Length: 111
Image (cartoon, rainbow, N blue to C red):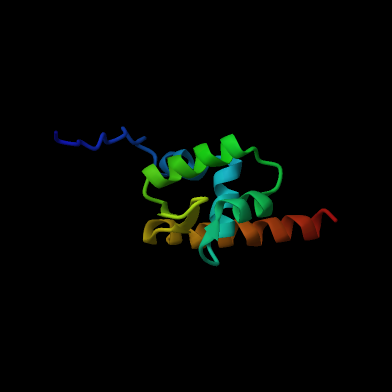
């Protein structure tokens, strides 16, 4: 049986494409927390905060299907799952850095 990858229709606007991939609040926080390195599911849930397990799982699966996140399952009992950024995911660092800088400036001017 042949497996075919279904390509999503991408928007014409590059900004819209980027937002489609990381425009969710949780996805940006997942990226932020995986930039320093690999984390287990529980570590991500704890560091992100008020996200349900269901939503975090769905966001991680979506990011994995878009090639932003690697998921590694260890054959142990109980299963251990680790998440890390792919090279494509790491390439979003300048965007997150710019968001950080902008947020810092905004806070400084509105404190």
